[in-house]
Image (cartoon, rainbow, N blue to C red; front, side):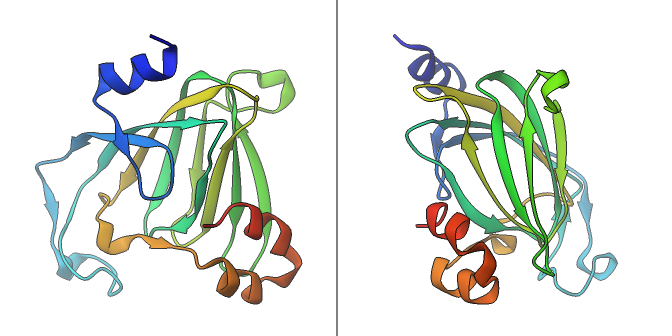
Length: 166
């Protein structure tokens, strides 16, 4: 069994709508009431959630956004390249991994409401990471990018948007 199959099996990972595989590993019992959250949250949210996320070099995590900040944590495999577009269209890339002298970081925070996509850097490889979200993740807060619409909003980023949307 290769390492990718082993990780999928050992951790019970399932396909994720944005690409790759995931499993929720933590959802706090405590809830933040809607009244205490910004108005763009349609209901209560858990304090925090966490997932395992596995991405392989034959696919990508498509541009999407959530309302919350999302912290990425590197575990093993190839570094992952995270592409981030701010609400104003500022584009940045961040390598998440363990080669610190090459500018990689083991953790990285994507601010809420920023579009982001990810890809495994090394060919024929995988990236095994974790993601922590607070307030906790809810699919009501998840928006998958429409490539045409996002490219129209940020035309100077059309190449990367076209490559990392479905």
